[in-house]
Length: 266
Image 1 (cartoon, rainbow, N blue to C red):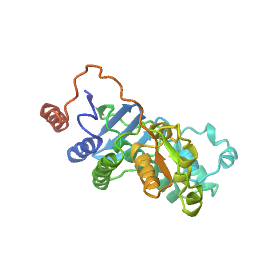
Image 2 (tube, one colour):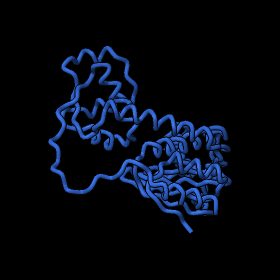
Image 3 (tube, rainbow, N blue to C red):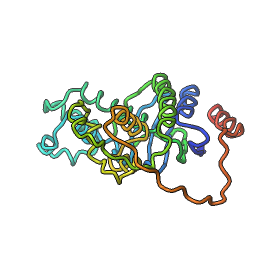
Image 4 (tube, helix red, strand yellow):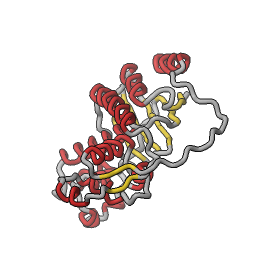
């Protein structure tokens, strides 16, 4: 039987830790406004991860990683090959990629999905024991220890960034000193953000336009603010209270105990 819950009560780091400690096999699906993440495990190790925006197909992963060009796929009608293991062998035989290119690209794809998931503070999840990943994909086992430690670090970082930028629904504008931007060496991601800043778009709108997660946009906006390259606009007027009781900040003990007992009993 599947276990269901919400990241408001039990975050992604805690879920991964339970799966790791209980050495479980199955699939964790998380649905939120950020999208749908699917993570598959075998004996407590992560073997597959994908978002709905990037479904984990080998050809797409290699192209995003810069290891393969779209025209190379057309050389032997790779789009007709549904099995990633078969496609991988053909790409290696053609000399387009190496086995290391494939494994490294798939690992990077999986890490990107997990790191995005760490920034989600809400979303319905369900864990289905023994359910295996999509057929015809290449599983790449990853130990969860380092991922869990990185998740905890990112949670601490996002809490700090939330103190600096408590509201994302606020417009940003470029500084009145345009020469300052020309003097600073910016990353490609920072330039992408700056290209969306027009004094009207809010931080959250920019985040969604650029398909970034919350920690990415907060980190970049905070850095640009500290460098004096952008300024915050006036926040929107506060909405009148709707009379809905505020949600408690603590995690229900019964929720935690239910999850722990569930994974122990599988």
